[in-house]
Length: 288
Ligand code: BEZ
Ligand code: FE
Image (cartoon, rainbow, N blue to C red; front, side, top):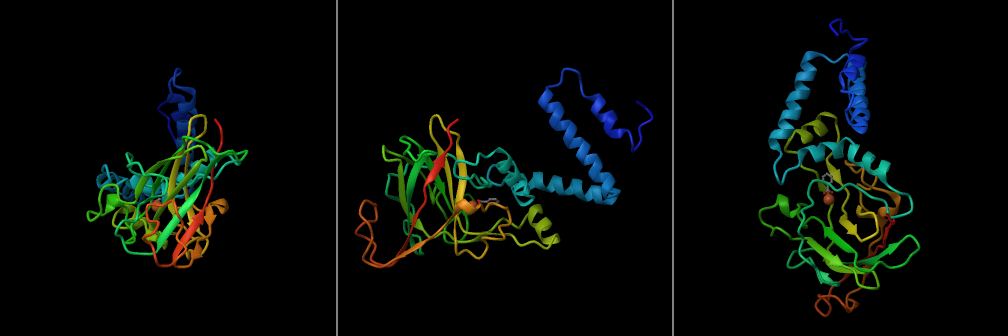
C-alpha cells in the first residue's frame, strides 16, 4: 500500500500481519497497535512529545539490570500490573496483588515459627495463618514465599547493608496448613524515585508511597499459584497506594499484645519480654 494516510494506517498495519501468524498474537498486536494509533490521533502527538517518550523508554531500559526492574515499576505505577491481576483473578480465593520488582527467588527455608527479624530494630511482629482451599480445608505441602522490607524501608536487593536474603523466607506447610513466623512490623516506603519512573510520578504530581505490607507467593500442587500481599488497616497510605495493590480482603488488623504474653512454638519464644503485635491471616487457594 503506498497511499497510506491517517485514516487507513491502522488497517494497513493489520493487513501486514502474516496469514499464518499465531491467532492470539494477531489479536494482541492488532489491538495494541490500534489503540496506539488512536491514542496518537486523540492527543495530536507532536514530534517533540514522541521524542520525549522514546527517550523515556530508552532511559527505562538503561537503568534496568538484574536487580532493577524499571519496566515492572512502570507497569505498576500505570496500574497495568494491577489490571492484569484483576483480569486474571478468581473471586473465590484470596485476591492477588502486585509482585513488584523486588522479589528474589531462592529464599532460604524458614521453619514454622521461624524468625526473620534477627537483630533489626523495631516492634516484633508475630504472623500466622492457614493455607486452605475454598472449602476451608488446610492444604499440606504448600510453599509460602515471604518477603518484606527492612525497617529502613528497603528490600535486601536495594540495600548493600543487608544480606541477600534478609527478610525473605520460604515455609512449607504441614498437615494443618499452618504458616507462622516472626518478623519486624513492616513500614510504608516509597517506590524508587531516582529513575525515569520517579520523573513521571513527579511530573504527574503523584506521590511515590506504598502502604506497609507483607508479600506472599503461595504454591501448592493442584492449585493456582497466588501472588499477594497483606496490609494493616491503620496504614496512612491504604487508600492511596501508588501501585494500586490494595484489595478489601487483603487488609488485616495488628492485634497489640501485652508484654509477657509471647506465644510458644516460635524461635523467639522465651526471648521477647516487650509488647509485640500479632496478625492472623489465612491464605485461600483456588484449585486449577
Ligand atoms: C513492592 O511491593 O515491592 C513494590 C510493588 C510495586 C512497585 C514497587 C514495589
Ligand atoms: Fe513491597
